[in-house]
Length: 334
Image 1: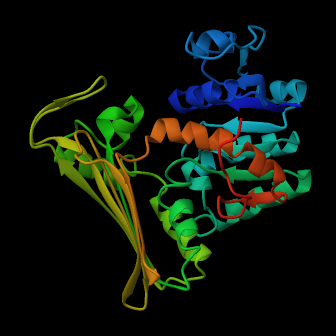
Image 2: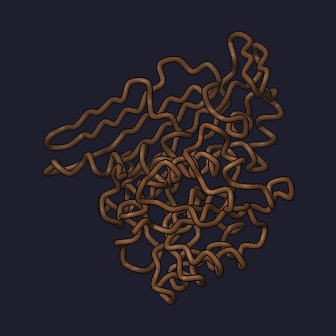
């Protein structure tokens, strides 16, 4: 029997996830939820567009999560509404209370135990109470800079340090992401928004702590640096215009130390016009491991794929709050 799925949140990422889910023969979309009044009442098939696989026109987008969860009785909810764990806490608890497993793209949910231990404990308790698993994932955090490098340490007899570099040309990504990394701002506007917490890549510290915990390392300290990358020439994308001297995007580095020794370094360069996109992992160990994905992993496509591909793993996981390092291996499935 196909897995019964409700898609919760139908912004750019949520729509991509719904399209991906609709393409899988072992998944049946049985409901859709979004608070946008312009989407509520629409046929999900119409919202996904002609490029989506055949989908019943009877599935309408609802702004009533409680009613949809009760009537659709999903096995799994694919959740994509916010990066903030505090903002989605009640949504996640409600889904767990309906007896459905949760796969969420909330970045702060990918590994919340270090930064938000009380929220993590509350969500774990709710999931255990209702016998479901709850997990945050995506391409980053959730895979490229945490789960993938952690898996690459499997053949190592010893690991001394891990360095990860992800370079993303933000011009190839969705509009909200281009704005989230500050494309088109002045340097002064960028600094103000960094100070306010509204310009940054969410999830890099979570990736750092997932790696450290997975490797059994107790970090003595960690830091997270955010800096603007300024455009050397003008760039125009579908969503923003960037003049020379304006902010093209962000360079963000999270580091972890044991004593004075840097054992973890996660560097993200995400800006409009970034040359040589790539995902690179360097493990200093026995043996050393070097991996490079030339061109890098396309974040929007890969996030949708990971969310859908994680369905069997989350359904087999023990009840409670989990990260990508806790569930059975996530891989492609039909």
